[in-house]
Image 1 (cartoon, rainbow, N blue to C red):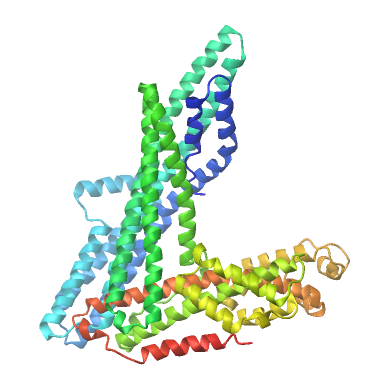
Image 2: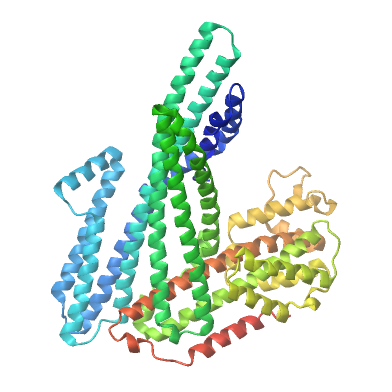
Length: 619
């Protein structure tokens, strides 16, 4: 709800097709109910813009500085082990890192003093041509290349694989910093445009109210005053909307640039992985390419939507300018501008949600921290590159396999949920058929990649045949609960207070009308509890009352399966990113033709992993 755009544009079409009393009434009927969501979106846009300046961008610079330190430490080890060569170049690299850090800390001190102190600092820096963090970071990357070149020239041997990896990671952190800076500017324009749109809507509503007074009175003086007020408010509203639409159009143009840069990076990563595809199992190549295809399509779609937003806002801006200077010209611009703006706003909201879901960004932070792969430098220091590539590709395949299984759990639980919520008891074949129907819709919905849908059908036929669905729904819930609790992320999810509160609230709602659950809602004196807590007495009651325990298990299973699916999507995206990093490292090595030797053990390793993962769910 950060950017709900186009509502004002819909209202602006009313004067073109309606006359008399209908015009202000229709315009008010659109503006009044939509003011609340637009006000909420404007608030979120301002908060998002402020967070980009005060938190997200500084954090991206800190990640750059941390990675620069990793580069210095890795190259220092190389220089020491090779007889203290390239010491001057390494010292220059350290100096550039210190200069970048000092420059960043200086800006942070001025930022803490307030926006005016920061603006003055930025102006003086531009006036004196003082290099900024971006320029210094670029110089650091160039100096890193000089140190590596010195190592290769003096001893005719390359730097360590760890140094290559850390240098590549420094380039990636700098790319992320640039993207965050562009996002910061885009959100700034959105933070200006959305409040401007809301202010313009307030002005339009006031103008409509004045027009209603003008049309509804016969007093000449009141009519004249209302007409003057309405004309003044309409002129002011047009001016405000011009500024808001310019800001929103700039935001769309900047977002298109951001998505174009992401598009190029996805292509580069795909090309790097394809270059080492001979050393990867076929299943890993297939999943990676399908994932890249999905993200490329999403990036292209986002660029098209950003272009639509910019075009729509440009047309609406032109319409408002024409309304002040040449009203007949405004009519042909308003309708297409409103259509483009509304379509792009809705499309962007859906596309952003789909991308965040695909990447698992909606997983909780504790789960992300547990899953996220750390910097691979220490592993590359101890293991050959080909072994690390095999380990990461194995993990990537395992994450995809686990995601498929988690999706199957969700489909089964959705079928059992409908049965438990008052529906008739289904036979084992009816349950299986409903699960099968849900599985068939997965390919069209995009929740799984094509290879994932194929693998899901194999898992269902092997481990969840019609005979698996025999028994009561609670018995099936118990079987699924035992399987889900074996998931590596289950313990982390179950320990989160927010998750526990959500399950407890849903369970209490289901148990509220049961006589067997009355002790849960009353204390020892018989008084109603103010709050229900998942304490020892709560779980003791569930153990003693099997039917109440079944209710709790059903709720926990549904919420746990959803969170596990988010975790598996994030894990797949994280391991895919690590595999891309290693592919780029391989291409940067001077001996890249032999950096990854053909190792036939890789394919059996993947096959054994998948076979073991499949065997864990056999009933």
